[in-house]
Image 1 (cartoon, rainbow, N blue to C red):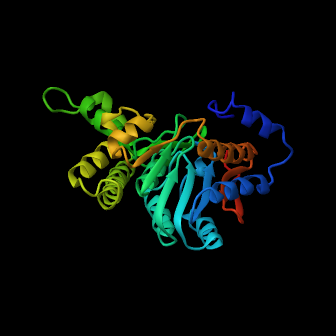
Image 2: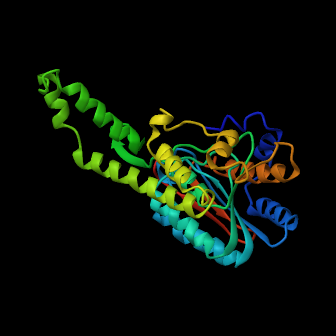
Image 3: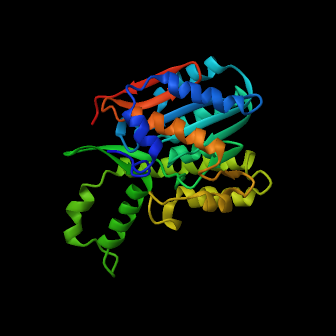
Length: 303
């Protein structure tokens, strides 16, 4: 389904009318972006938002490594990401890999970097955002089989659902209500435990990144920010939109760079993103990794 943020964009309409999705158009844009900045390289990781096979996972290591090898070491590295999230550990791994190739890491969020993609963003020195950009809570997402197919469920939803069920199942005398016995018997305790551990791990990674990076001068704020982002009680919804203003409040005004939509740099970023997103309208494609000289797309049979 087309992204509603792109629907009325004239760039989007023009790109859809162009024939094919040859990487040369996007790679020329990358070269234009790099030419405007000294000692800077850009790579992209664009995924089909919300698709179970598009989650950040261990298999991302190979294409990311390919991109980094293709650009070589650089003073400044810009990583553009669009993702609904995935596994926290693999987001951490991508940051660590990028750090081996640069002195300064910038993450560009043209549209959405949610869940584990927000964790990845927290590992940067700076985050570049505009009016279309959003981060979100960092509770990891689980892929759960259902009769309707694979469903992506946030860890906090699993944990909170368990806590609320236990609370509702006990009467005022502390006894289990009979009506709740079948429900309690069907709870996947192992999955709840896994979700709790995943939440703690996400918090630890975010805290580590913030204490060593954007909030290194304020360790207490790093701890509370990681806690708030991991345990989404503050935001009530996993899908909560953290825009550039809120991101500045959370991470420090100098750590989030806001570019207006008509800023010349942002227009180049936006066209690069839109061209990438347009390619992913191909039903078989779920991820696109690119540098100025390398293009890797990932296909999936999962619907």
